Amino acid sequence: MRAAVLTEPTLSAGKPRELFETGVNLTAVHTHYDVSPDGSKFVIVEGGDANASIPLHAVLNWDTELSKRIASSSR
Image (cartoon, rainbow, N blue to C red; front, side, top):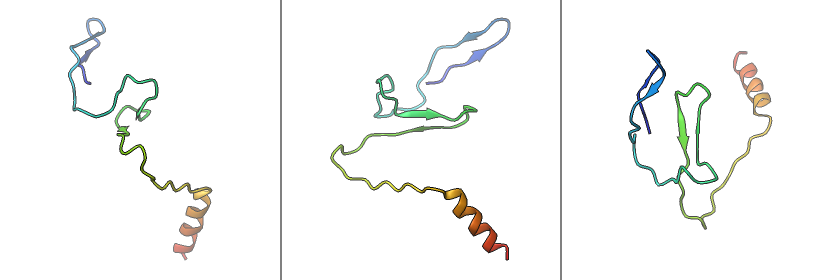
């Protein structure tokens, strides 16, 4: 949703309008979206096959690995 926001002469918001349709219930208890701290970006996780197996790759200590790669590439 989007709405125009005015700050003068007083704070007021216009009529909310839909940006686009998603298959996500944004009023559900578990949120499937998030907004960046500065409000400039957002991500929406849309559901798929609940029985599908999707690999998850967790990279631990990635900052150490990145530092090593940067150091070796600058030689």
